[in-house]
Length: 227
Image (cartoon, rainbow, N blue to C red; front, side, top):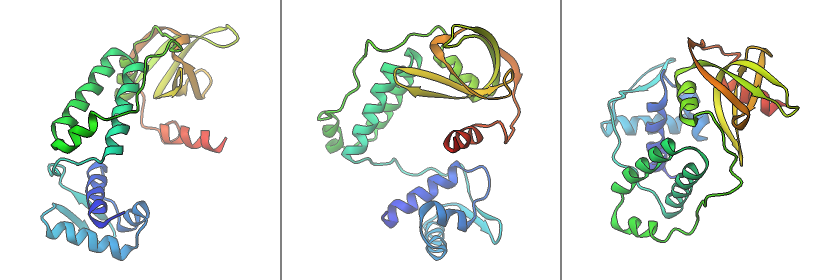
């Protein structure tokens, strides 16, 4: 990774964090030495980036600071366009509209040569008759995950047995053509995956689930990886 790219990525990393980030953590993330991180941070500060730091605590950035528009290369644009197409074909209309809106904003920042690259994209996602329909609103499920609302629904398992579930929704995962809702199931007291096409009577509860380190997405993914 070139220095200019690393400096840009350090700024984005600090902007995403909600607490101070130590130099050792940054060194691990960007796979460089502590000395390099110290030099990079000083370089950013000297150029006017509002980063503050304290020994033993870490670095924070003023969240009001914005970088200039990011430039993409041809492969990055093709990857983004492919992702936008897949969102349109494999999620729902509301999410597809948001994806197209994001793509238009990206296009508005591109110089003429990269606009030309967009016209030469040769990787596409086409509509598929293998898509399995579902009753639940894909957008509503995403909003429940974002707001941490508990949800209730009826679930028909692969043995055609129906149960009532209350879960803490954590993520939507695509195993094309199937979408899975992953969450903490109060009935089973463990992480469970539920196919969207087998969910009915979906109800959003007013109760929000707490931040529990033993029942969050990171723990769920770590358990899946371990299994």
